[in-house]
Length: 180
Image (cartoon, rainbow, N blue to C red):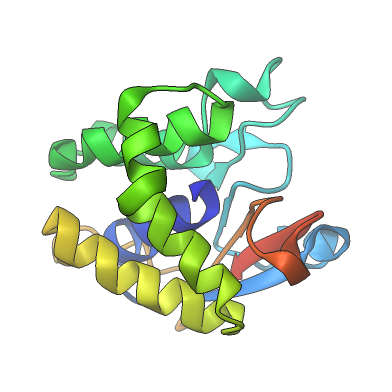
């Protein structure tokens, strides 16, 4: 969920919808480090000025202290982007990523966005389609159209990369999310 939410926040709010999401294996991250405009949930680096948003060591001592979605969201808030209404989603994402057994997370796993993601992952759809459907769901549930006011376009096709070790069966152990 962290990779999905952080990639969605980056694509829709940092890049105003003008970015392509691509999922890549962890071993391929060095290929994307220099060419990606933004990295989320991958790379073991936190540098918001360079649009690098990972919460794993050495970026942070404990990976459970934050999550990529929270790092992207906090950067958007500091940049003046109106995403405060997504605080609940960000907290829910952090709870799931850090193993916190909250009531909201249990509910989400039963019939919320976490349950939706698990159903999509189990359906056999490719990662791009799973992400597309999750974005559609997130936009509908959280009423968050792409932000028109802030565009960080570094080239004609913005790139965001990220990672989520629990993404899906084929991406289950060390696969990554990348926007190209």
